[in-house]
Image (cartoon, rainbow, N blue to C red):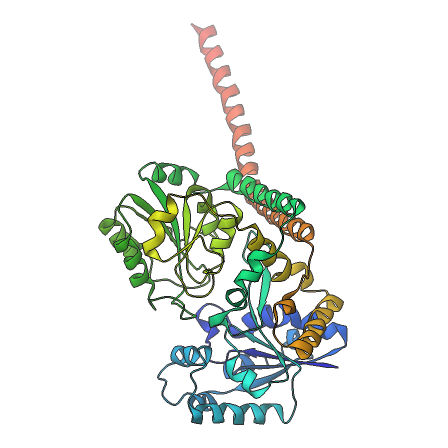
Length: 463
């Protein structure tokens, strides 16, 4: 029986945007846990925060998963120099434990596992550096959002088999670019891009705003603001300073559309946006307006994306929008240019062909939500990767093909269609009571009209 350990970073206080139990149920159970347990071939344990373990008591969603609480006292011993959970999270992610901290981490993990040794370790949302040191025989993976991940797209995961700050794609950029791209591949990518464009064109809430905005500038770029530099990839740890740096260094004839992560609060609220817009007339800040995945709606109206810790730039590449990397890890390997100093030059030249990178992402590095309930597929997926890891280590072939491109395109487009069918049905349901009222009012108005007409006729006869 394969032993799988989930490490749900216990320094993360999920309460900032949702109950810890609900976040864990979403990530731990819905993404993989339920399917793996149904296979009957996996023993599953999960290291979680004390608050998550406490909330999950008696919760039927976690049946069959042993939750192991990594409490606050243990965290303080592992991170003696840190003064906040955020500092602890960064220290673990960057594998910056002191010798004493590493010993305390090993000690606590030993207390939790009692000699149980995992075959596979899956960490989220963090790195696995200290875990690989503890379990060198285990295949360690980081679960992260895929090229699509939020509504209206299907959810998807990608699995990093190396430490995130020097990621798999960075290490194998040359091999990825050398992969052959067939005519069928290009047709499938075009089919996906056209399907997405059709959805955006039909329902875009920002169309008029962006058409007017782009007419004012020589070029426009999209700047999805990173959430607090969670991975330490950017020069800035602060959203406001990050965006201010972008605006200060770009020419004023380049219009910038700033969006932000829709799961978290942001420094870029209406008040700060108003101040920044007054200071920088070439800035448009979108503060949400109730739409998820808001960056999607702006992609058809920009000439490039400034990508930092997000997959938005890759979606732009799919639509033919150049990607300019402002991080050290996520996008540099596939970007058309790197750094703010390269923006102007990159905007003046055509978007380089990145079909190979997109095919690799979609077929080797993406697991769509249609697989989240497939017990046999998930078990085979992990077992095959574990066997390859134990045979050759982390090589380029470890992340071999897992899906046909046509099937991935079908899955994404089907999910898009289903999402908007639900959206339209919900709108129709909301309109239905109003329609009933309007019909009733219409009937009364018609009767009133008949009565007034009758009164007018009677007056004419009397005169």
